[in-house]
Amino acid sequence: MDQFGGNAAALAANLRTLCEGQGSIAAVCRKINVNRQQFNKYLSGAHVPSASNLRMIANYFGLSVPILFSDPDEFRTLVDGNFFHAMSTARQLPEFSRFVSNMIVENNSLDSDILGVYDRYQFSSIYKGFVLRSAFCIYRNKEFLQHYYVERFPSFDDPKKTEYVFKYYGFCFPVADRIFTADFEGIQRNELTFGVYAQVKRNSKNFMFGIASGIAANMFRSPYSTKVALHYRGPGLLKREHLNNLTVMDRNDPSIPREALQYLGDGSDMIQMG
Image (cartoon, rainbow, N blue to C red):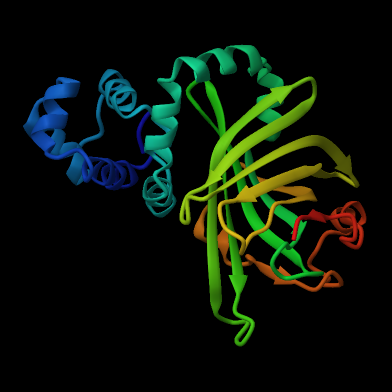
């Protein structure tokens, strides 16, 4: 473990993942001004960079230092979804900078309340009348609050098999005791989703209740707007264990929190364009 509480093996794996799209290791070393031999030790896990070198590496890739120590499987999910590239490109746009300047409200106490992993519940727009449980995560990357979530849909013919997987990546904006979200789908890359949520505590459980609206570039997923319940599960990023229970369920499934189901109702108020 290093001074940031990170794992050297995780850092090494994530650096190798980042370097895959950089052309050559030598080019990366030149750009961040780190000796090639020393950088090879970082890639092998033999050494952990100094605090100053960690910051240089993180700045080069447009990430925060803690993100570099993420679980390698989940880190690769973010990279494969083109998330980091898209976010880096967005940050460089003057229009985006102006938007963020107007939207972001610094509130550290709110940050600590909302960061972490959630079970996300909504009525499915694909499996009519069924509740979709996905895995949702909010984390801080430098000055930004960002989020990502994963949906899995079982096969109609064999519920034990996964038919579809969707992964969404985006930003969170805490404004006036509300959380506004904007994200895009990273596999099909043809859907945008927007949401607004408010924190609620019920029976010592932490929830965020809100509304999400999405639109895709194909007719398979029609534009929709629906209620969403987020149930807080713990700190950190998504791990494999959080993804094991992703599915579509009957609304009477006992694993759905009672508070979430009360908020969602029977799904009849979902707005969906045919």
